[in-house]
Image 1 (cartoon, rainbow, N blue to C red):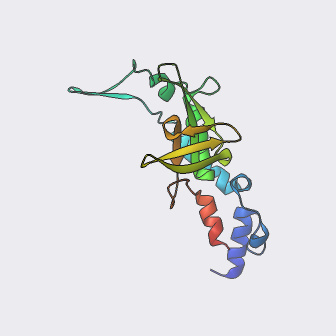
Image 2: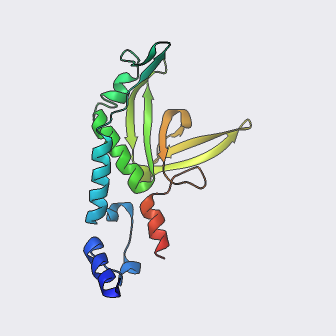
Image 3: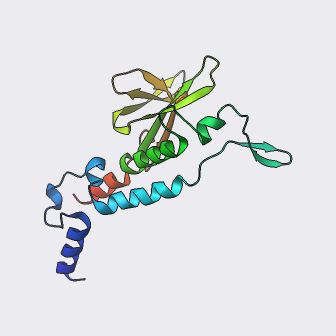
Length: 178
């Protein structure tokens, strides 16, 4: 491939070409402004929301949807009063793809049964691994609010070396340009 062809291709795909690539601030938010990134994320999320997860009951006769299970409505219909299951899975997928992490806080009733799943913005979550009585646990701090135990958080992580937080594929690729 000739250099001119590569330059034209990069300019077309990213709008910045190769010459100004070191001067561009690449972040999950700025990456969405690149048409190909937006289109890829939209294609992935549109495909995934077609397959809504279900709660399955395993019996001696086989697997069956567990319609009467207390978390079935959360997983399959409405995880939170502000969004349905499709919007929940779409947003969690976008967070995972762009930031490398997706988080949801599990709200519980007085008996401990989950009653809603609140999406947390990944850039506002700090993760720490603490050892208490010889047992390592993850603790999550959201914004300036309380600290949550790993039992109260759904954490989906992409690439990870340290096992605390994932690294987005965009960040991983950005680091190869330096």
